[in-house]
Length: 610
Ligand code: M6R
Image (cartoon, rainbow, N blue to C red; front, side, top):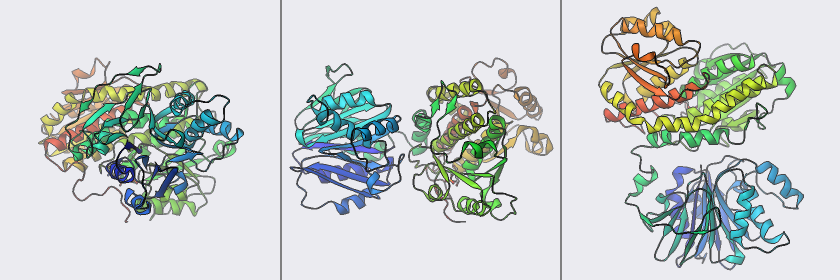
């Protein structure tokens, strides 16, 4: 997730762009840049925050039109050369989104003589715009070039572009990434969201997918996919700046839960080869031979990432036949691991900076193990130190409680397990295809859960005053139980335990009373009958059962007191849907208890100390 801005007007563009970018920093903050037209193209960019960019912009830069960008790296490390804008000749571009087919486009452009200066997917857009305007036999304007360029792109984008030959306007395009246009008195604006523009205007045009257009000082033109001019109504927003950063949500956590249809899509964008029944993981530096003879994998992580790792263990064993251990990083580093060089270590860490995880991975490296990092932060320490990195591409997460980064970790683990399983011929292309189809359905299914969130809120409100909560699940639903308990205790301060449902009878049943809500994750699958038996054990102790169940399950109501429904899905994939449901349960419980949801007491987003 990145932020883009543009301004065409009668005031100094540099200060407006910098100020607007500061408001978008929550969308990404590892590097930034601007391009302005002051007789020629003046581009300034740097690694770091917007304040670092501000420091390098000359005071005497006299320009009234420009574009800007704040970056959250997805392709290429946070380095100045990977920062936006990307320039091709006299064309400059900023982009938010992911171009899935950029490798193929890059090869074609290199053959045509274009030289790439960055590792980003975005640079192909700059060269395509330039090539279509200047290097083909016809002469076209920037808007036409933009239309022809987006025809070549697969993926998501909000783009703003400048060209010195049409220096009075900015050209924009949008598909699957947000873009708004601000209507001002001294000029007009483009931005990833209204937050960036509130200081200048509250009059907004919302751009839809497949629309393109131009922003000039006195005119805004929007065109549909068919090239026809569209008349858009101006909408006046009433938000203050803080509300706008949260896109109108009360908390970042709720916003981030709602971003999951998009973040999940971004995690698997360009990687699911449905027809071949395979996963494209070019970032994995493991040869076919190494994968074939892999004997053991060890997953190392902390907190939520560790919970994701348990699901990873089950998946690697089920789909790839690889014996997998899951280790808590803080324990592993002081244990006596028995590892050898042909083994694989997988470190899962959202931040890429967790001290315990880094230390544990370094220890496993000392045995000669191959290492893979699964992280959300491009260029983080773990990403720099491991042999391969799989980025989860969930975008920045501000709430301390991990939500969208957890589901992104799960999606990455599904993809890695399928990839390893196919490379070892452990699963058939058909079985892989079924899983891929299941993954592709997830964004729509998660949206369905979000649309029904009121039911989850009602349930949360009923039990918000309880002292203890239990979460139980079997097999793949066991890590969901652990993660959901962690989420609830972290933000609502209710004591919550996640348990393997079969373990209840070995002790914890003694704690259950009529006042203890027990959430049973009871999705269809080969342990379904077993969890029904566990629910009966719970009911026999008079505790209240909240079941998470498939929408087509007609049995469950006979057993549970409250049922939270999720769309029916592939058995292995249902944990993603149950997790989103229980993130909302935790959120609404904390809301009812008036807790500090985004910054829970005693916790930090990134734990860089032991
Ligand atoms: O950045 P990491 O994934 O390595 O962080 C690990 C834990 O600190 C983290 O998951 C923590 O448990 C979260 N606050 C959970 O919501």
